[in-house]
Image (tube, rainbow, N blue to C red; front, top):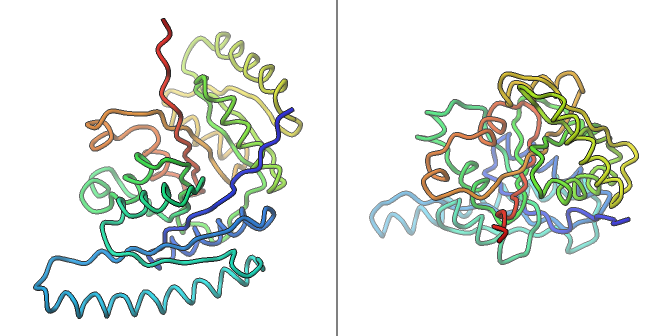
Length: 286
């Protein structure tokens, strides 16, 4: 059976808000059993201004960011107790989404952790597109968390399945993560109709996964719901999940910029952390 050690390198994007602090704590929980290295990243997004004042602003913001970063490093070292050199940090200037994606790609990170605020579609479109942009375009998984809950319990992980062909590979990574966290896994599919069809597909997914991974402690179930997001929210409540895992399929540019899909809805509605995995595009078969 395949074994999954996930993740191997973690990038934490911080803007020094309480949401970022929660993301940092979450990254520490995940990194601790694996002794995975963590890289802290802060982006200086300088507003447009005259060149002279811009230089002063850059210096002022940079000094403040350096001071805040050292405080977060101290907190992280206390939480992790990792060997010297396992925790690094970087302060860059530029547009947050572009810089986060650049660092994630060039540094071969397989997980980005960042905070987000619960908000509606309009405010997200107008004011807060950093989290959405990273989720849509990241080359790796993105884990977001709010500050609504002071305690983060990862004892139970729920993976939402749409019976995509990449779900088995995704489940392998989820199982690897859960074993390191000593968590139980629930694979859930929400269906409106044709429950017998959903049952057959879930049994097929369970059988296929059990041939590839150690699925002890993994439950497979389907639930009824008029809307997928509502069904998953009810599943989180009934199962007591502390982390939701969803997958993101490749989308066109227009959908990426303006789409308000299930992934965004889950990320911005859930009070618990949401882990978004990108799936490879489906290959057209001849």
